[in-house]
Picture 1 (cartoon, helix red, strand yellow):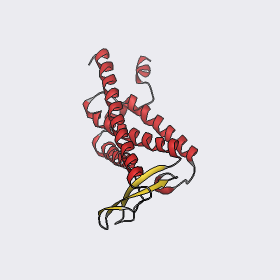
Picture 2 (spheres, one colour):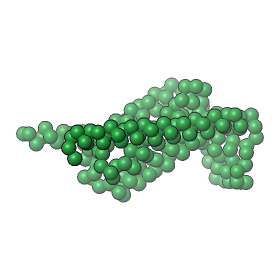
Picture 3 (cartoon, one colour):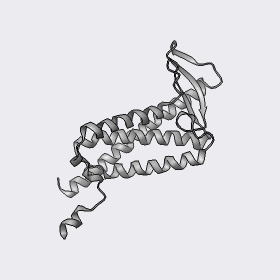
Length: 180
């Protein structure tokens, strides 16, 4: 693929990434809006008795309620991670085999931004999905994006992609070494 076509393909992929992230972010924010409107100050809504409920919770910490009331620290860490993910996204090759990685990283970005929006707006994250069967911490749609995408990425990088596929992550400039 020539450089011009490769650059155009890269721009198209990044635009698709932005669109995917925007759609997922909109869905996350809409579900949180519904949670605030319909669940706040109300008893939990049972979806599957003894298994799954919708239960409004204001999470002022991070994952599993850690770092309670550490808004600025959590936001700082989130912005750093977002920067790393964006850097990785821009470095991804345009080959077809990496398109799924583009989508998964877009989902992680949408989830991270969705929770950051809550922290900026409310000083907490709106959580509302509760697996009561295993007494799991209450979570939201953005958390689902992040956790499921990271698990799939882990599996892909562990079992699908080979070391050669990941050479784009090498910080050494091979083109300069070849000139010597």
